[in-house]
Every structure is written in C-alpha cells, then in structure tokens.
Length: 136
Image 1: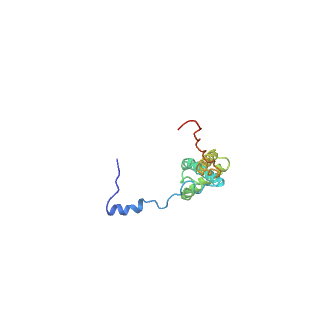
Image 2 (image 1 turned 90 degrees about the horizontal axis):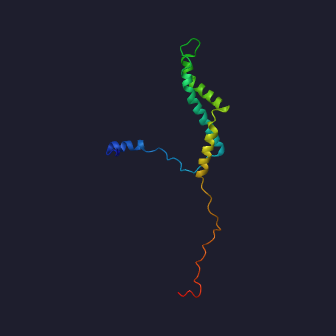
C-alpha cells in the first residue's frame, strides 16, 4: 500500500500540519554531560516506578468510602504517586538507573567524533627504482 500526498488546497492546508515544527539536533552536536545522563536515568526510573504504581493506587479503595478524601483525593493522587515513586527511586529503586546510565554513556561515547589522525603521518614510500641490469 502506498500513500500519495493530497493534491490541491487540501494538501496545501495539511502541509504546515505535517511538517515538523523544529528540526531535531544533529547527532553528536551537543553530547550530554555525565551529570545530565545520571540525572536523566534516575528521572526515567522514577517515572517507570510511577507507571507501575498507578494500577495499585487505582484499586486502593473507593473515593466514596468513609474517611476518604473523595474527589480531592482523586485529583491529587498523581502527585502522591510521583512522590512515592521518587522516594522509592531515591532509596535504590528497581536498579534501572545504573543500566540506563551505562547504555546512555556508551551511546554518547560511540557517537563522539574521533580525533583526527596525527599531522606527522608518514608519506608513502617512493616506488623502488629498477635495479641496474634488469634491462628495460
């Protein structure tokens, strides 16, 4: 199945909608620092833990139960889940952050530009001159 672009005014109207707003940065132009990679890995782990906790808190009782927070509790639940997830991550979490750090550091180091060859590159040796007596 091949898709063809829309022709006419409909295609012209959709073109600004489908064009990317900003071009992504070129690979390797601004490598992340070690500290930024560590921070990103820990932030990702906390987010993953929060995603795992959501179903648990969704089934943790009815908002209509006596002594519950009602609608207010329901509206603040995402903040509570994020706080619990950050707390779990700060105490070791699931162990995802070190693996993510390692992968991000390896990716960053593999995309770093390699240093240029030394300026003192030996010139190619001249071709051997025919020895006398070979007769050519």
